[in-house]
Amino acid sequence: MTRPAISALIADARSTLGDRIVTTDPDRIAPWLSDWRGRYHGNSVALFEPSDTAQVAALVALAGRHGVALVPQGGNTSMVGGATPPADGSAVLLSLRRLNRIRSVGTGQAVAEAGVILQHLHEAAAAAGQRFPLTLGARGSATIGGLTSTNAGGTQVLRWGNMRRLVLGVEAVLPDGSVHDGLSALPKDNRGYDLTQLLVGAEGTLGIVTAVTLKLAPAIAERAVAWVGIADPQAGLDLLRAMQAATDRIESFEIIPADTLALAVAHLPGARAPLSGDHPWQLLVEAVAAPGESPPGPLLERLLADGFAVGLVADAVLASSEAQAEAFWLLRDSLSAAEKSTGPAVQHDISVPVDTMPRFMVEAARAAEARFPGTHATAFGHLGDGNVHFHVRAPAGADPARWYAEDAPVVTRFVHDAVTAAGGSISAEHGIGQMKLGELERLGPPARLAALRGIKAGLDPDNLFNPGKLVSLARRTANP
Image (cartoon, rainbow, N blue to C red):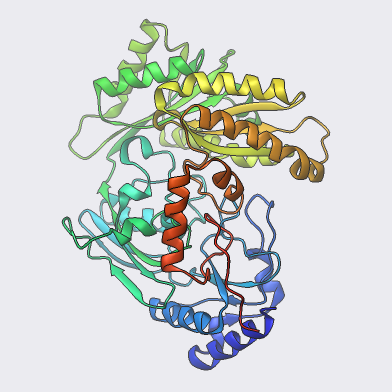
């Protein structure tokens, strides 16, 4: 099939760019062939590891000459199999991890290469008295290129938006091997289509991101973090609305059901629930202060007291130290790993209009459990921006192989139908990848799907960039 073409590509890459750029050792390649959840497994006889944009462009040009598809990969933290190569070995991995330089940190913006780990960018910004206001549980391994290519969200979207709002410019290699240099981040630029924003969220199907200009925010001088007990999601949204009417300094507002919190407490050694008593729903709230602003602790305490006075808050505790604040956030960041350790589940990263989310969280979970007896449905996440992670755990004792092969697809269709009926999206922040490709084609508006396919066909007609992800497009027969 494509093995002779791949072999020719490997030989040309070694001859042109040196032996270091390509790995064919199966043991070195193996860790990068499966997704984070272990749901998708691919094959690749080679792993290309360029160290700069010029080498990426050269590799893309060679791959195009030989008709070999490339699967770009950063930290491999995709939740939807978006960075996993095809199982038939018809594509090769292109790792961006060696493009790991932070080119500059200036006032209000930074330029970081695709392989820069999010945590490292946080540290570099902090050293310059600034911060990059996007964080998530995988910040120690997720890379800037992957975050850009998936339009990642996280726990600060409420105030700062997702990657699309934080990306000011992009450098990327296009399928023909040319380099789009859009790093200048011009405030005004009306030269036609916005290629930078087109590449954000494209999941590596239109261009391989090599560097990004990012928006920075003033460093936090102080933060206040509270754990709050509430009766139901509607109380949580009402509390958020009241807080937002009083201040613009609420940066994170996460909702967690009690049973999901219990999983995290059991998963983390030495952890305990922040509140005593029985609270069916709980919130993690963070308020911040920039240099020169008043401390956020008294502000958050007053807002919670106001919520208690009108019956929205049942109980709350304000972190008394930075260590306790970090402990609160560790519970939140551990939810996915904790659930993963308990057995098979099907995860849905969905959004619906913010005002209808509280009702959806309760009614959709009840409907899923009724439709699939023995399952347990729950939702947690970013209540304030209408995005929650709606998970359905398999019945006790379920065989994982059978569950994922037979039951999970039916559950997913049921959940996605409910999301679509509510005017929502089946992918809020994780992307489409290969996991949701069929569902996007089933539920996506025809005009939208036609536009997606037209853009893909126009920029990558031979379907050589991350095939089988985001949008379907038949590949031309590869070179023999």
